[in-house]
Amino acid sequence: MQPLKYLSGYPEEVQHRVRTLLDQDRLGTILSEKYGEAHAVRNDRQLYEYTVQMKDRYLRKAEPLNKVVYDGKLHVVKHALGTHTTVSRVQGSRLKASREIRIASVFRDAPAEFLKMIVVHELAHLKESDHNKSFYQLCMHMAPDYHQLEFDLRLYLTQLEMGARPQGD
Image (cartoon, rainbow, N blue to C red; front, side, top):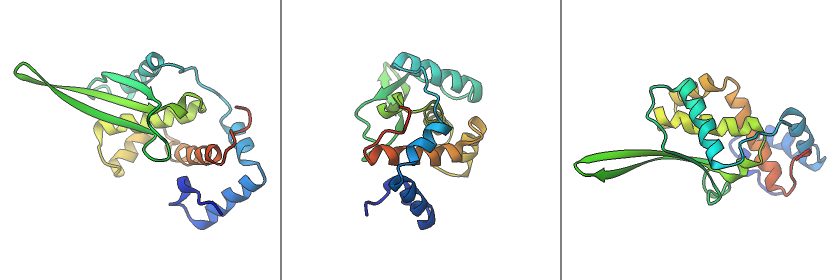
């Protein structure tokens, strides 16, 4: 039996139900019924605008973003779904910080709500570097259903890993 790496922290009962849905070939159908809406954020410029718009709505006082891109090198299984970095450069006698967000390119084709979830997650890191209570409160401020979206994203990634695209894609 193949381990469900995206669900490894969840109780065995939850993992068993997911395996049952996979065996019955129903997980993709359930996800597409719930998250069938695709997004129009197809390129890096659109992703930047989408992210900055969300940042301006919820995190007006946070430092500005210099770059937001889809990153094909972010391997979902081995690394992360998204990253946020601050690159410091010396310019004359000043230290200039550049803030970047990179989103795994798997989100280019993912349902709209999953892109929103990962952008919310990375934006929250602008204020909170650790995954602590304040971090998750900020995520829930930007996306009240954040925890459900995170779980469903794990189901989506599990579906993709098992070699089948969710139904309707």
